[in-house]
Image (cartoon, rainbow, N blue to C red):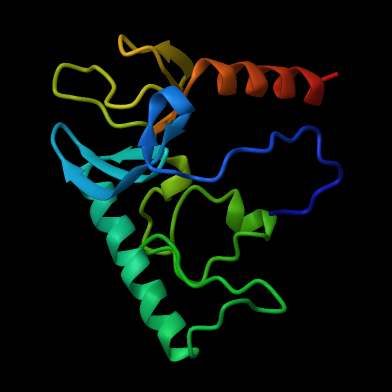
Length: 169
């Protein structure tokens, strides 16, 4: 979970019970979909990406899985082991400032965490670099953060809001 100095706020969430918005359940089946861009649904979250990003993501996941299998599929490890990186960024030390802050990979490609959000041919952004909360016509909410979306009901949104406020006091 990181090098935590303090847990600034916590909300106990209900155990997943499938898709039932009136009960605050927004867990969709796992799915990977392509329409205007790629959507990967994981429980109540969705990440969007372009075809180029999806390809890099899929390659990194595949390589990570193969390495994990070679290691005997351990459930946990005593220390962090990086199983995958963005294609072309292999061997860069993400914890070392010089590597982490270097915008270019060894092959002189712009590194993943320096890429701007992709634009359409009209110049509009595919994914806005924003934080936004949307009330949906069906009555629940979408919380957008860059290319992530989380679905929730009004009560969960209120609880999250309280927790954000408490964390910043």
